[in-house]
Image 1 (tube, rainbow, N blue to C red):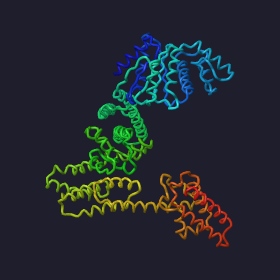
Image 2: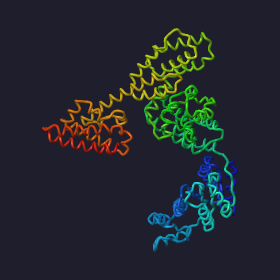
Image 3: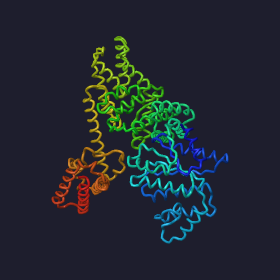
Image 4: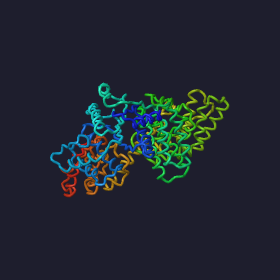
Length: 613
């Protein structure tokens, strides 16, 4: 198909056709890539063989609104190209371009041979000189994204402008479009107007597979080790084949862009060669799949729902995702498009929150990503293989399954510090027990106790990870586990809020962890009122008052969306104001500086209440 387009374009350039030539095709089929690569090669070849000295000017009308904006933008492109390709001994193009920048209201005179800047003789003379001396007949001007012009701009105006350029300059014009995306009104206008502007049209078929592989070859290979070049191209071919011809180049480019961020971040970090190689392999495959899901409109999960995808090897994917109780369109799309194809490259596939965040939010935590790769892809490989044996229990007889269950219980004693592994075993054994296929005469309560004890020792990050694992596990009753997680979260929040409050009273709270949101369930005002010690310090310690005052200003007064985080503190803030008022009236011998400080604090709290309520 590409050869047919190239042949048609070459014939058009050789012809005496006085109208424009149209290349029409759907989005993502590689039209723009073709122009920016293959057409440039065609023109370069024509120059090298002496056939013609064409000069290419590429111009996108995407989002253009008034015609003046379109004309000005095109002429700036022309001036820049003229200067580069033709040379400009007296810098006429440069001066004219500079003048255009200065007189922003100017209608650039290159087409109309007229100027609207009142009385500006210099610009008129420059324009006249430039038009008389410059020859644009060998130019090839490409108007791309015709269907993307603003709704405020009439397409017939654009077509009229194209015809005007061609008539006055006798140059070649190629129009790139996707008429399937035009409105019904514009389609009617095209029918009536196009025959006067465009003579011939060719359909640009789906050449996107070759273009996609070229993009990967050009952009991805330089970002990875030479040893990965063959692997990357083979993986790319296989995954593109999985799309069954539905390759969208914008999605491919987006996927490549995300992977290049991963590649840069991973290579900038210190790590073993094995971990870096695995991180690049996993990043390449995972960004490809997740980007395709996201760009197709299917990847619209909230944070908890995304947990179904996190840190799950593809071999376990069916078990974890089949339990998705809501909309299964994402799961079925991933399964139908990718996972059901049984690729050897799935050995390197791992879904992590870091890649999902990168694709959806342009946020990438490289250290967490590398730790996940290390923990799951290396340290737990043998554990994963053991767990996978339970998914194939139907192929075992009773004696073999009993032996496997015995091994599992023994493994728990050896790996009781590894929550992920122990929970996978517990989950598998519970499911077998529910199906009356647990043949050992032992109580699984010990494993449950081991797991809940582990939860009571975890930090917030670990709790978030295992909560997702539990929510999407096959265990029917998850309540006790989730209660244990919530209890540990509450304990951590209370501990951290208490420590933070002490830092605030010491006026060094800015040194605290800025990545954590404090007082998201507690109220700083309520905590003060519940502590006799803190209330006493508030009446005696100027540093404590100053620290609290600065914290309130920084976190509640000066932050526009403070309501989102502190609205639950409104009532207790009012209660603290009442306490301060009461003390100011009640304590006769209150230090006058402290009294002044308390009045300032009261004012800050009142401003905070207005902002958070």
